[in-house]
Length: 465
Image (cartoon, rainbow, N blue to C red):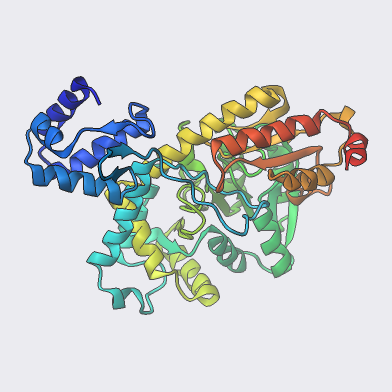
């Protein structure tokens, strides 16, 4: 470590008085690892040299190095000195991971991991543990709802606290809404390619889904109006921003046209906006175009991780919120107070924002790799998304289901288009997820497998086995 770097540290210590010196030095070590200034095995100054260079006492210097050791950033060897360990090791699941789910990217930045850990520890340190183990009123406590409102305010122009319900995940919210909104003999309109969860819920409840033809901008307006004229539509379900699986974001003009039809025929809209905070594109929510009809749902599973099964439902009004809460309480009793406490803390202290930024940055880097290996003309994706919609070349003769199974055998999270189809006419495409417990190097290796397989006729692959 050269004199210039130590001078930079000294200036930071002099200018930043809001944090103890030992913590700030540990943060500086982490920053320099993240930026690449430090590489694994780089030697750090002795305690005495560090103390002299940055103007602290020996005890503070020792405490700073000890803090960095606890965070896994450095290591010391008697007689040899103190050395940089490098980036935190990637956590692996011993039994593999579910390769048919759309899993969030897991950034391995040491400073972010430490921030997540400290925030989580703070929840248990500051809260009455028994209060988190008791039954709670469904819909979240006051603090949880205020945090949810802060989250919703990023996408809704007029979010109101009285209309907010904290739910145990988006899937749970969808289940509750469909039981409440759909009467016998009615149908729910969905796109011809839709989130498989809505298909599973409908099948379980015996609800008929009416498939709407779609184009590159989302569901077509005319087919929606034609079915509305028949008087049997209970609701319109949309996943309008970075749609699963196609990554389509419905443009404002199409949103306005769909909202106009819904308003003229008084059709409730279920707006599943699970991926919206991963997008930097300004979009107008359906809930702002048709506020008196729209049940807007967003959550944390696709931004922070599926282990945080927390969702925020904004109902059209206070009475609709109460009815929805009653339906969901009958199905799931309550959301987990411990999960709600963690999510609320992460939103209020900025940890959630830091995670979302890191997820988006890493997802964009992985998308650029995919474009390099596969070519933009073969795939649809969006910046911030951690899945893509891959076209299969006709010349390869691959069946989407067979190719998906083959790719999963090579460690690539692939799902055939049939899983998303609601019109029994799936295209020759796959959804490929590049999130989950994999590194960027793992993803690049997976891309090589994808490229080789889609460019190789199916019969040659079977012969190779």
